[in-house]
Length: 169
Ligand code: S3P
Image (cartoon, rainbow, N blue to C red; front, top):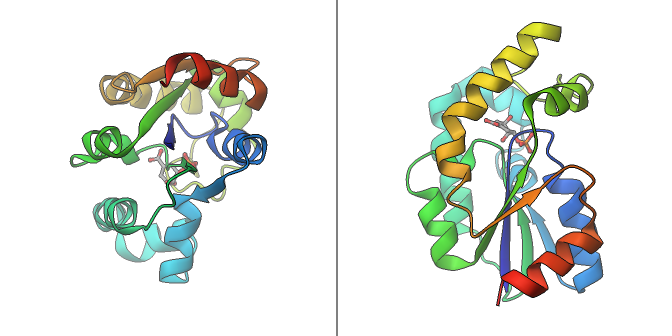
């Protein structure tokens, strides 16, 4: 089974994905990391050299051109499901799990680790919460198309594995 984890920055896609893959004894792929390896630049560098539009095209290409094993957990960048036909592509090629969290919780988690995230670099405190609220409202229409919506609060890899056993058959 191919499982694509989607959700806002800071929702825990990479951490949970890595742990879930270890539990399920399958491969883990972090698409942001794959993109960085491909261009030999960090995402922050790529954004500042080429801009967001170029980044969106490239992340879509990386999503679709990566060769996935039959069983794999894939963590995706927070914006990826919201551009082009990426959400449809993921649903046609596997199960999509949305890790859902409220803006305030995301803001607390994102207060550290903003530097490597170009969209957040200049946002602080209330600004950061407002930005997340606005982006999340825009993105919800895409995120909510996921096969499974999991409450990200106190979500563990073990719980996620159980949810998948019940719902992803
Ligand atoms: C982005 C999320 C980031 C990364 C880029 C843009 C977004 O990934 O792809 O900085 O638009 O939400 P994470 O969700 O893994 O932080």
